[in-house]
Image 1 (tube, helix red, strand yellow):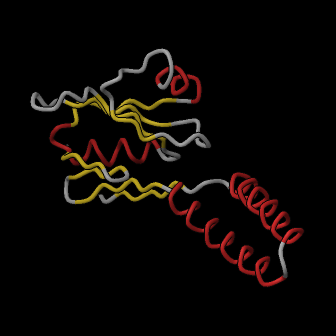
Image 2: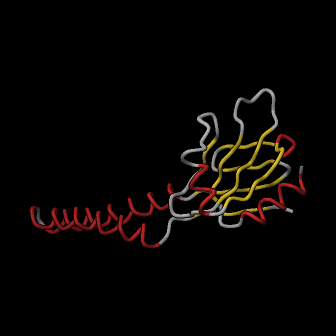
Length: 145
């Protein structure tokens, strides 16, 4: 079973960024001629698309390898997958955090999974990953490992 999930920023986050960029465009409109305003508007839209893309992250499980963003690990090194609800995730990413852990967190998604590793060569004890579909991810990983 292959698993694929893309976490995109919510519309309200992108709207907030858009309005911040829009205020810069208005300041340019007030100070400079129309062509500068048009150019700044186009650049702000392109910047918004770039920001939206950079805020997105992918979780992919394929060929017995789990990819979270740019990080990857073979499923044979995964010992356990723990589902975290909103309250547990808040505790894990604050007071219970291990500085050696790999974090892939998105502020707009409150739930996630804790992936415990069992690799003697790797000092990383676990991965803390934000996901909307924790049950599916857990079952896909357990089928592979």
